[in-house]
Length: 507
Image 1 (cartoon, rainbow, N blue to C red):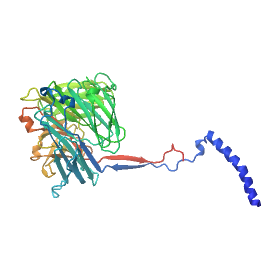
Image 2 (cartoon, rainbow, N blue to C red; image 1 turned 120 degrees about the vertical axis):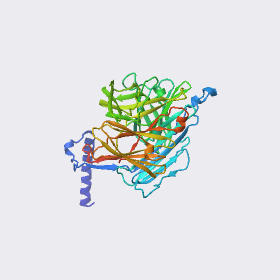
Image 3 (cartoon, rainbow, N blue to C red; image 1 turned 90 degrees about the vertical axis):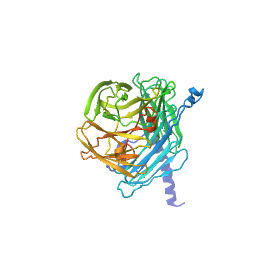
Image 4 (cartoon, helix red, strand yellow; image 1 turned 45 degrees about the vertical axis):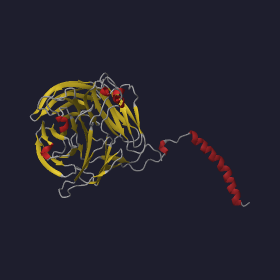
């Protein structure tokens, strides 16, 4: 053996025990953090990402419960001659857009019918039958004035859903909040969820009622599972019966889902109204609910996390009129009977010391069929510099615009037909603290979509508006038909993503 080999052997025999001892020490001793090298660099990079794809999902038209379809013919619930129509309109820098019945059916691809009118608008309508409908669009740019509005209207003159139901079609979200009317006898409220993703998700539910503060112990469990590409429903009225109002928080665990609530009220065999309800906007201290008319019977639904005083005022074309004050308890849903809406009043303003959520339930009775009435649930509105809504034919609309600010607001309204062709436009000024009403027919015959652009030279959007719908067939049958369509904002949807060093992680 050479001298070099002997040296290597001796070194190995000496080093091996030392390495073993060092490993044993490190298993029971953690070096102090001061011995670790600090993270290099301290810059945090913020990137704002804009959404380029917009998808909405219109639920299937309302149905009566299966258990109500059995028994003697004279006592069975019936959907009667219920019909439905879905209309979508896309505006601005849109690359492609389409409507697709989810139950199987022909996909409708949308196109701009007039490339020379300078409007960059496309629209389409379809009869969804008894299936849900998906809308999908891809934007070339994310900018103000680019986006889409999708809505569904259903109506009936016979059966247990006589009247009108309408809703802007929801988009898939992780969280949704709802404020809903009484869950007493004869009331059915179903949360309907559609999962467009490729993985299942579980929706957790929390419900606050009117009888006490805090979350209720639900009688039917507090979760629902939605399969990939599937629908699921949950009976809210069975989970929290006997409340004057309920506030619902729905949270999806794995994937965004499109959620809405169908509300149907019966008094024995007599229909008392039905509507489709979408999720609420964020709570606020100053809220406006447009779309009221004289002779409406109104009940205000309120909810806030904290106790607060709430001041209510009517609004019309002459200004504000103080109504009353309500002391609201925290973490509880509250129903406030406002009685009949006075003639000429077009909106309700809600001012609170703490942020609240608000929905106005309006009801009306048929002129000939006194056993029938209808209801509409109108949420507080949100302002956007550019927004739009759809009016599915054969529905007609009366528009209500409200300026709750202290300065005049100028706005431009443009009407479009079912293909997206421009019909007519109108510029107007809404004075401070006032509401204004006009017919959609002022923007042309057979208006299927309306876009509003606000002059936001003052730096913020403040105009609140919606559309009150009617259907001639319902009116001619002497029935009450109440429904309201809320607009969708045509504004960029952005998310701020921050990246930087994590000083809590060791290298």
